[in-house]
Length: 134
Image (tube, rainbow, N blue to C red; front, side, top):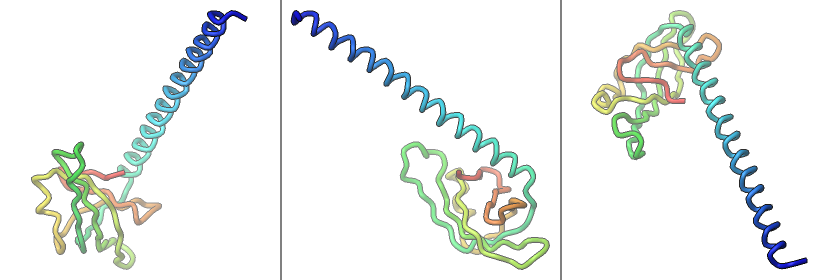
């Protein structure tokens, strides 16, 4: 077999392999986007049907180092939840909070929250400038 023919076949195989790899990666990326959109829609549905209640911040830890979070920070909260029925309990959650509002998220501060009916540890904020961190 001639050398130029071998080179042609090698290049053809590499091109076809590259095209299939590119298509597979695009498919995986699209699947990740679909999954993320489904998860976000499910969380929004659950937040709408969640029950209003009060909470007190036990501890708060802000994470502001990430480059993509210039206007907000992830805040890990430990909350004392006071449901309208049942005993108070402690839950942990993470929210995205606008940077100018971080000072409001201090231990001892009272919050209005929404608690998922089926998962009492799923706590949604009812604060302007705060959203659930998923």
